[in-house]
Image 1 (cartoon, rainbow, N blue to C red):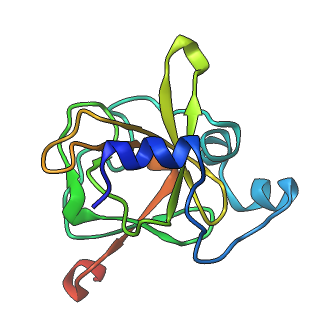
Image 2 (image 1 turned 180 degrees about the horizontal axis):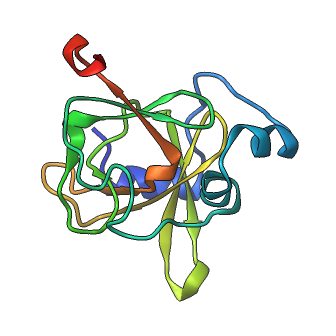
Length: 154
């Protein structure tokens, strides 16, 4: 289980090695992503709070990166944080996201990126529920929810 101290160490010193890498040209990213997805994932934008695809979705499943298909989060770690964006307590694997200090917009935050394709996902904060106390605040534009049951797929 990752804790805030782990996130800070990764951001300051070195992120874990990704399971593999996906590299695309800017033209390939533009062809793959919608303009809104491109803005968030490649230009570090954000989507409007509360008016996004997964803010109020809590069914079982996995949340994958729209850029490379990597499993980023499991729905079992998703919770209602009243932040306006999907919130998770832990990534699917220790090495699937990477962290960087972000002082844009006159704030000090930790940015979260896909460790496989380097897409911007959102930010992580130390105000989540116990036991780890983490809140991964992630843009829906970056995510693709995959149902976990056959009934959901119908």
